[in-house]
Image 1 (cartoon, rainbow, N blue to C red):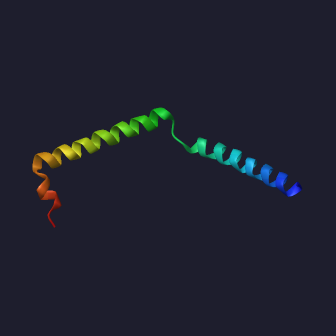
Image 2 (cartoon, rainbow, N blue to C red):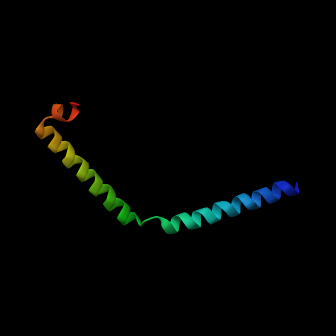
Image 3 (cartoon, rainbow, N blue to C red):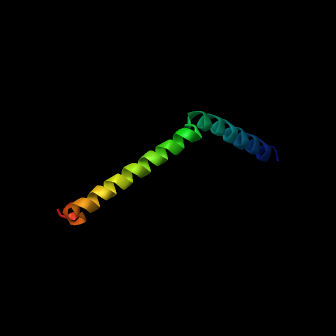
Length: 61
């Protein structure tokens, strides 16, 4: 019974510590949303240029 309790306490402590450390390193939601929008616009631009130039040129090796 004692080892079960000890394991539970260690597990909960590790979860608490990990959550605390990870949330400090994550960017804010505004920064994450801006990065997502920028990457989506960049991908759309690359796809548009590839379609304009002809997709068959990109796939030939």
